[in-house]
Length: 107
Image (tube, rainbow, N blue to C red):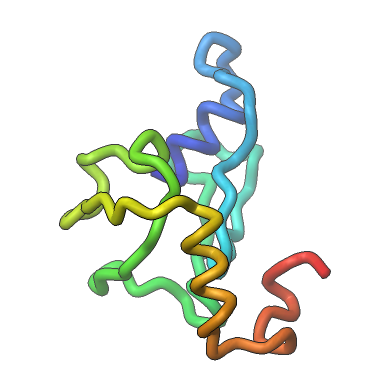
């Protein structure tokens, strides 16, 4: 999914370029080389400070079904909560403080 997003934004073939932006995220770092061909751009992926383990399943949250196709992941479910309300709930009970986010989010 990440490679597909990079391809639709930065493809060397004009008819494959869809414009727009790379999908936004929090807590995920991706090292990639835009000059590489499709499926060879992403070099390393980290969740927080740990490199992604391709054999591990990770729990994620996304705002719209449009962002993540059904073929990606499993156990998709609709939580029937608005994004702003979910963010407010997270910030009220978050175990993180500002120093935990340094280096991962803009100040």
